[in-house]
Length: 135
Image (cartoon, rainbow, N blue to C red; front, side, top):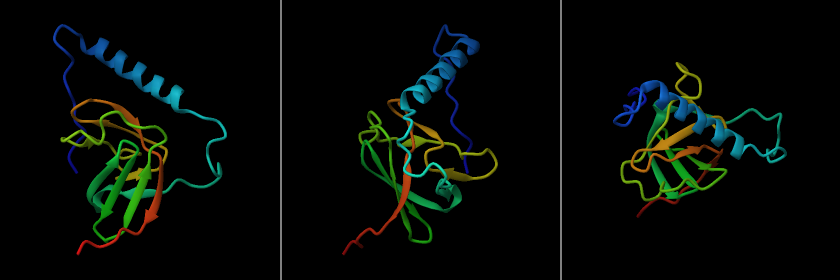
């Protein structure tokens, strides 16, 4: 698996300043997306999929990502909020496993970034789906 992408700070911006902005952005995303009582079952373990088993993804819209696995199962992730530019981003998105070294991606526990628009978005709930075969 390739390492997470790193983008150097903008011209004239120190690394420290860029890191502060990044941390502030993540804190804002977390604060704005936390909705007490919105979890269907707070005691249920999150669904996790192994990143190494992902064959490809399909972006249905700014709120839905389909993960096509090598074993031919399909997982649908419904984002808690629309992710600006996700459907239009021709360069896809970048994510890291939920726990470094675990190589798993878990529902409701991670963020990702679109590669063109640099929107930071949150993964939602994974559900197993059946997708009709193409003829």
